[in-house]
Length: 555
Image (cartoon, rainbow, N blue to C red; front, side, top):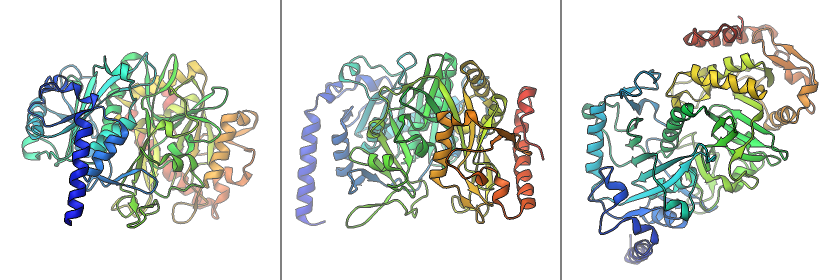
């Protein structure tokens, strides 16, 4: 670095420090003490920046060399080794008050209280003398069910992420903000498996009793978002609110639709509809009053993003948005969304207000239509089918989609993936709890449920072709508009779901997946193989009511 560049960066830092030190946000730090943090054991800190606005967080991120600006104005960061969630590094503290409630399994892994306390003490020691960023906000757009959250970050870019991802308070609300739970994210602090009882240097540890989340060793911002979602998946059930891993939108008349689905099924893309109003893209609650977004932002995948197919998301990526692991042109800094060299899980976070026809506050009515999205790489599920309420719970608790070759190391052929309730990694309780709640709400509010395959047709992955996005949009549009209420259906012979005879605007042959295969016998063999996987997976729910078990496919 030459002397002129050093002088310019030194001046920039000086100017930034002057801005922050004179900011009214620093009034929370009095005589070197931070009353809101000392109760957490955070002492002997450097500068603490409270609730900084977006431009200042971006300035800090750039000066700290956490990221650079892309040509569209978004901050672009590289998350290093961890380019996605690390499920094997997530733990729940085994505490007396919740021990008998938690569904302890391979995703809800216990860690002893003394190990948590030791890890926390080591983290507090690491934090001493460091600058921190604090965001105070809310989770839950409906004030009847809203919770206050405080997120404490080592990185300015992470604080930008949570500022855009959660609900942002007004200046007046900040005066009385008191956190219901706290997230401390310190990527620079690495855990020690031998000392801390964890699996690697990365850790995400939730304490429901202390209402505290500790995150370290990973720069992937999505861990903060999903740890908060895990909290909501526990707390909301106590308030008779069904927490859901789904997107939501509504039409001009206020008719709400929900879109459940795992990563890569089109949940964010399909809910960002130019002729409908977006409520939220990922996490919602369904109460007796209606549906509401947990968040204040969106976290969309950008791999192979195109302006033609996803114009709203494309336009949302501008100043204030944060890109993760997106490759930029070295000279122009134009994002290359087709480049997956760092990861297939390239992401962007932006406030929901970046979508022009969003709903503010992010609250909708009781859903008229519920869509389950699956990307079936075996090419055997119909592109759209109607489910009875009992079939809906079977498919909800199954949470099926598929992984394809190239998305993960070691995968050379399609693999069936089952994630209960389309979000098993974030469910502290048994899937039967959420399934029962969904069934009750579907019946009470008379919602129609459709299963939509956004995956393959004409054969499995490698032989068939991915169902075109315009076709999927046309089928979903028909379902949401009520056009499918007036068509005939027939039972699929293997999956027993109801397949429409016609869908306005869609070629008839594509509706019957067997007709799209060149070899009908090969289709039947593949379909029965997938049906068997469904049945094998559902054996874990053998105590489910008989009427739900009877919704299983046959092989």
